[in-house]
Image (cartoon, rainbow, N blue to C red; front, side):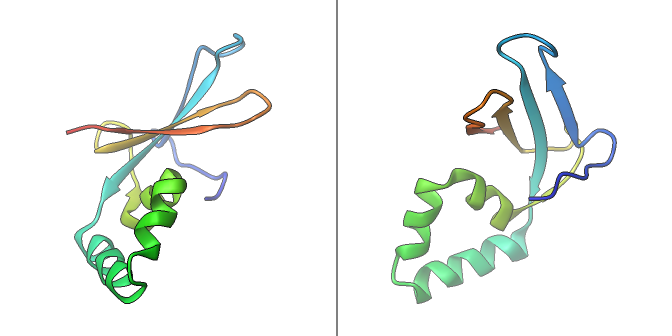
Length: 91
């Protein structure tokens, strides 16, 4: 969402190399998950489809930023031109 992160919420892998990536840590919150479930029911299944097409939106809707040590979801973003986002679930 925003570009301002506290120390420990954001990390850079392979800095200065061609395969440079940014990591962002998120922790799932029950109340947000419940609201997303309600939104899924009231949107007749459209919201889960949107979250399927945009995994980062799913994380942003269900989770709050936290340190990478506390994270149960990690988003990886490449820093090359196309800026793709990938989601990794840590359990």
